[in-house]
Image (cartoon, rainbow, N blue to C red; front, side, top):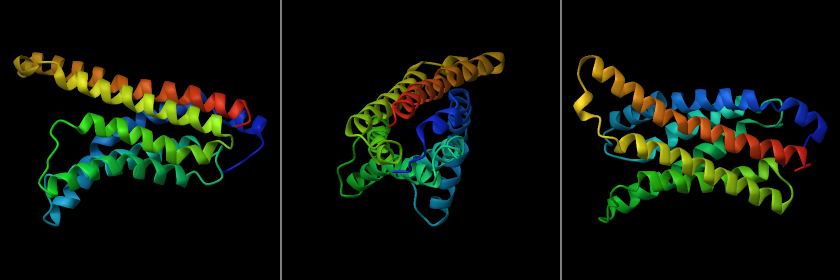
Length: 202
């Protein structure tokens, strides 16, 4: 674990900073996913899910690593654990499809599973005690589950009839507001958990 004296860590960790970088990471996920998908398709691979995990994990992990650069000795590990944790469930969906057993409508469950894996991978970076690690895993799973829930809700709202003119703008804003609320939930849940973990000496 990357240990630094707890009082100094607590002074360096700012919830407001964590929220800002987490929200920024969330909105960077879209271009990151598009970039990874484009690269994968350029080599002849299409209709794969794992670029979602790679793109989202890299964008979110990278921004959160920046928020933790004064707290963790090796913040780059946060990026790699986030990317790996989010990629594995989506890669699993691809492998299942390739062997002839596609699982439909599982992308939200993959995001939830990714949150669990991210929490497991990150726990050793921020906590020494098993109880603290378990709390972080629970917080990560809950946070990503709420994020996936916000995306599911945004995708479930019938906005097709509002796709033209000013109604189209309203529909886009409604979608972004609901989907974007996931970033705030993600930041709040994980930020509070980080504050507690650091203040309790990990």
